[in-house]
Length: 255
Length: 307
Image (tube, rainbow over all chains, first blue to last red):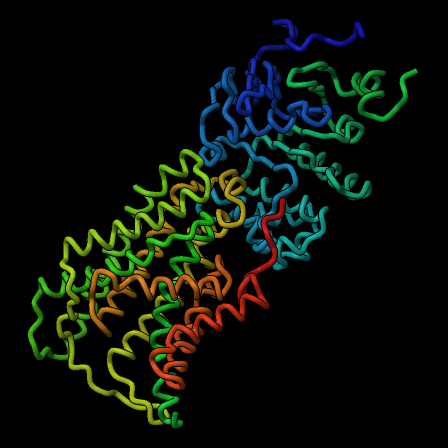
């Protein structure tokens, strides 16, 4: 209990040389009258993998959707490298280097794998073939199926395609919403290995997951959201060891 | 009906069907990106007819034009028709539909707005251009060119067929091979994700209307050339083309082409077999029958939006 930091980090505990790549400050988001985020503070530093954990309805997806401009906060700020980006429409926000892999993958079902990837590069004049080759290297399955329609792929393949599509926009920051949802454990393993590789190649990752064990093994730091507020914020290893996290999200019975 | 009459009616059907196909594309494109049944598209078509009529009347063609003049007249009429159609569609989207989208209006409101816009536009045209039918100024001597199995084909028919085919090929290229086309298809499949990829939905929607308007307007000019231009000319071809879009599978561009051709042919063969009184009975019987067995239309896909 006492090891858990407060939601708001005390000033000066971090080396404050450069502003964080992404910073959410006191974010409040409403769906009509319902307050989904009640003042969320969160930061992602360059090169990190940050996991966002929590139960259904805790506000994980809302946080991510606000970061990528799909939702506007009622108050609070979204900062990218210290500059405010809240209120910018999502189709303009991609230019700032944010890639969003949405919940449920949502590949374009009636487009081929290649067309899906090309859509990811829509913000550029033409898709970067080297980038596409790199993605086909990361996901050989997609290369094999490049002319197959997105809707005919398996769930795991669709997740790979959704990640590849976001990468085609050459994001600095990749937002992932539940990449493991509905996938077989082996496929989840594969996808997380590839996420590690993507991170090692220089992309910062903010990851929303129900699968806390997988997420925390990959992540540097983790936040736990509960009913719209940050309940815990720790190094990933510390969260993995925390009995409350183990009980609530890793399915262990607290002793 | 003798065999030569059959070919006559088949030619009529193919020609009319190609026009239906071009108009149907306008319905299906807009439905694709907005799930909106744009009933005012028939008025875009009508404005295309007037665009051609006004441009050519202003230019006052000579009564017996040379070959070169004829080509110029047709080109000007077609461009003017397409232009006015495009402008009408652009304005329609901006004035009638965009404010509704901004306010997330329910679907029924869009439908009523579409019908209202249609009434508004054709009555406006009646007021502006008069309520009498006007023939297109003579652009060429509409003589018989050749015959197929005894069915004569004249210049106007060939003009309509060739123009329609060129427009369909061009449109198919734009939708499937260009960046704008990718944007249109992406918005049709998942607008939210499309915007995450950097697609400006408003821009794509607006351009989709303009594309549909250009095609519809050109079709209006061609229809007016074949028959006459009048302020309610959009109604029947519009409804039929809408039916054609549904028949082919609404939202599917190639389906609209197939549906349009099919309805045009069935309509005219029905006339050939049973007389003009049965004209729309045959065509719409086919529509009902096809949809009974294939509710998604001929080329309609069952693949919905994957959640």
